[in-house]
Length: 133
Image 1 (cartoon, one colour):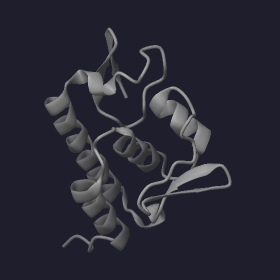
Image 2: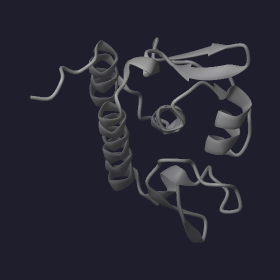
Image 3: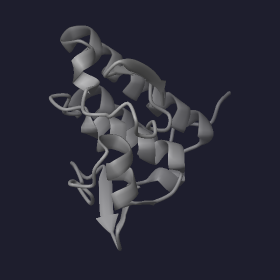
């Protein structure tokens, strides 16, 4: 019998599945970046990996992420098992896929095809090419 899900996993799963704002794709991309890193990340680095610029470095949302000392972190990430991280990443991918089906590939157009891909994200068409993030 698998161990019970952590409180952090249940909270994050509910947020991603039910409350995460999908009017912009920054929230799932930020979550995916932080889940993939397994530790706090420099806010400038997270922002530039997602948007190609750091205009939103230190942005937090709904008690899910925190900013301090120049780093973004996922609240409760130290409680997550590898399996829970994988499940949350998959849920983020599913939400992004649904947005892409609804709104088309241009939803990802903020990324330059010359920038490095976002770790752990889905394959997305950007500009004239496809990058695997």
